[in-house]
Length: 232
Picture 1 (cartoon, one colour):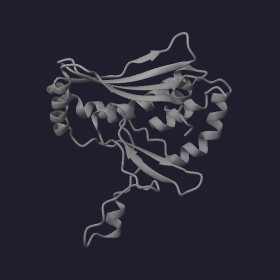
Picture 2 (cartoon, rainbow, N blue to C red; picture 1 turned 180 degrees about the vertical axis):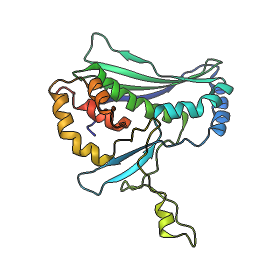
Picture 3 (cartoon, one colour; picture 1 turned 45 degrees about the vertical axis):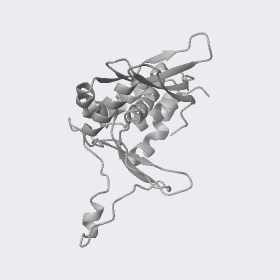
């Protein structure tokens, strides 16, 4: 995927009397967080090494998984997006973890908004919000990868067959409603034609909607499509 233009990444903890209550509430909530279901699969194809795949949870699954423990402990997360008017085309994606007593922790991602189509920038924003949401709550929403990019797997138990060990390999999902998820191979095969349409002026949102009449795209695939509309 093309590089996302992050200009600044900063986290601040407000000096507020309620911050200790926030930390205490977060500790309790984290103990009640369930294991996050990884409902998406993406394959990475590095230029200088073998391709590999990993699973991750999309933003809606992450929110649904933790909303009750957060609410039970007086916690909330909001993610406003602010334009920096009168300056170079930039936007700030804020992720604010707050407590009912007033304590807050704020993560700020400043990104360059140099896309032809605002909807293209929206696809990148969705991608970044997912990572920021997981980071501020301490969620594990992606497969662990080793230093070479390969997913880290538990050692097989004694007597476990090779077929059983291979069964842990992520598989392409068929989502509710009957549409399959776009496989990495399909995406690679279609990239040239899809990219030609986007660079010729087809709005990113229309392009994604057209593709998803036949197959569902991952957040990473949507972000890559959005990057094709970026100003050169």
